[in-house]
Every structure is written in structure tokens, then in C-alpha cells.
Image (cartoon, rainbow, N blue to C red):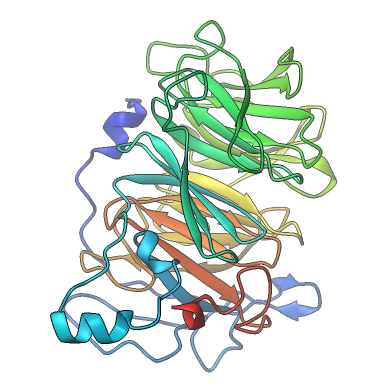
Length: 383
């Protein structure tokens, strides 16, 4: 039986389980093999977190380093002189504005955008400038109703898939509303948006529903709003979807669509022609249980967050498994997830993961990137 997306998101969490990383011979990123180690961590076997949490763990070469958790605006705003002493003396804490129910994340030059479905706006954590702001909370044509999927183009323009408005709302780099694409005439359950780097072609995912055949990716001119084509239809055959969740653009303009109800990722060329798919339902790594969002890095590797597994898996552009990070856990902590939903990879290769249950955003840094490197820099050192 197929389930509506809201029902899927409200299912009781899977119980915590042990997880193990397996050696994947022959998988490579460039000329360097991606290897995994083994980690058996559960609430029944607590242990102190290492000072530097890396993936895969030693003795394999580290590929990613856990960098930090962001829970509120206080986590990115600069500490003012005397604040530490004041908090020490008074016991006062600067809680800032906490995440309510984060869903998706997108990043542009160190500016982190997080959609919040309960607060009904997009939070902006501008780490390089040490500023926090909101987008879509003002009354008017740019006001958001229930923002879900996000994307940013090469000019820093923000694209927000609003499931309540049944439209994609577009803002400039400073958060000023520009225009909207689509309407209730075009979408039943809009969940995700992706735009090409030039900001010309927009891909919007309509998840449809149990009683709908409108399970597809709708393509629009991002400037004029004109409808260009539709990709996919309901089904389980080649190029078909059952409850699609997200879409991303990879190398050579290829489109990668998370086909949630068919437990796979479907790949199309830039014109929407079916190429291949990878993944299947199962409990083993490289398979999917509740795949949700997808991201692509500059090398074309594919990152898929899975709500049931409580992790994200990394595949090469053709779908070979390279590595996975994280595990399902009832106790909050680094790389521990209960309801992960959103994922993004920035220009420097940092990975950002949203967990709705623990109301947090986690950041991972490529091991080859210095802590103070890239647009985000040493964000821990700025607190």
C-alpha cells in the first residue's frame, strides 16, 4: 500500500540499531579509494565521543570530519566582549532563535538557508558575516506558507518550494522577493525544487498522492515561468515514479530524482531522457528504506539521506556505493539521527544534514580541507 508523505513522516521511528561500515573494494573518488571502517554504537553501549569524529573511522583514511551542530542563531552569531564572563557569573544562556521544525538546507558561499515548516519561513545563517535573518516572514507576495525544498543558483538567488502555496517563490541574494513560478493549477503536492546554475531552468517535484497520477518532475523557465516539459509519470517502470521526493543536477546536466516509493534514484539526461536507476528496498547499505533528499558534489558524487536508516549514503555518479555516514539513534549526538530530512553539499565539499526530530543542522568537512578553509572557514573558532 502506498502512503501519503505526511503519513510517512509521522510513522513511529525505527528502534536504534547497530550499524557497520563495510569495505568497498574498487570504489574510488578520482584516484583515491573510498574505504569504510566499522562502528558499533548504540544507546546500550555508550562511549565518549572522540575529539575529532571522522568517517570512515581509523585505520581507514578519513574522508569527512564532523565539524559542528547548529541549533539556533546563537550558534553562528559572534560572541561579544564580556559575554562569556557575563554568562559565567549569571548562568544566563544565549539561546538565540532555535530551529522549530527544519526540513531542507541549501548553501551559497557560507550562507546557510534552512526551511522551517513550523515557523513558516526560511532561516538564513550567514556565517562569514556573523549575521542571522529570515526570508519569507513579511506579509505580501513573498510571504511563505509552508516552505519545504530549497535551492540556490550561481548568483545566490534562493528558490523555495512552498507546499502550502503550491508554487516556487524566488528571492534575490539579499532575500528580496522577485517572483513565483507555478500555482495550484500545476501542483498537487510540491515538495522540492532544483535550478540550474544560470538560474534559467527550474525543476519542481510533485509527489502526487495515493489517489493521483501526478507523480512527476515539472520543468519551467525560471525567468518567465513558462512550462517547458514534464519528466516521468506514475509507475514502477523505467523513468516512472512512485512518490518522488527530490531532484538534483549532476555532471553533464544529468538529473537525479529520488523515487521514494520505488526505493531508488532515477537518472535522466539534461533533456529528460531516461538513462538508468540504482537502489532497491532493503536494509543493507546501498539499498534504501525511506530515501528523502539528494545532493551532488563538484565531482558528481551523489549523497542520499535516508530517514529510516538515519544516515546519508554516498554513491559515485553511476550509483556505486562509496561510503555512508551516521546511524539511527534515540540519543542526540554527532552523526546520530532520528528523522533526517535535508542534505546539501557546498562549493568546498562540506556536507550539511538536517534532522527534524533533534531540530539540528550538522556540518561535515572534507578531511582534505583545512578547518579554516573554504567559505565557512573555522566556524568553531568564531564562537
